[in-house]
Image 1 (cartoon, rainbow, N blue to C red):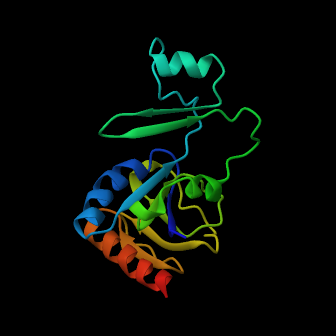
Image 2: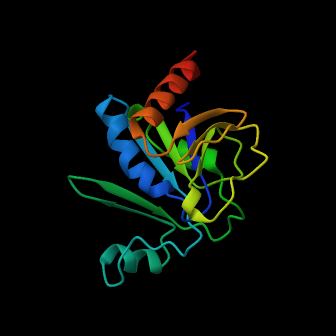
Length: 169
């Protein structure tokens, strides 16, 4: 199983900002990253008027759009009550990945780094749950887990590399 590591925080704290810097840093170290992002918005990655969109709207339960450079699988899930993170992760190609980063899914029972940004106006979510392995913050705090500098991407990547080596056993 590919290790799952969630980047968890209140909206507006900088999850995406950190991930946009962290993913290239991990890639430069030879770590192949996948990403699962949770959104609360109506997800529409296809464009009205395109054949794939029209065929999906015609009733196809799954549509796979492919080119020489990439492919995407869209699956209709109207009957699904709640997202299952482990199921979603199982849909990813394990032969191409060393780590799956997860943005969102705060309540999932997976290892997570919780972000705290002093200027966000949001408190550090306390108490930290048992799945929190570190807090990355832009101010000095003393949680019961590792504390990382939110603005030091190399430090966060170092921590993840060590954590991954422990996961391999």
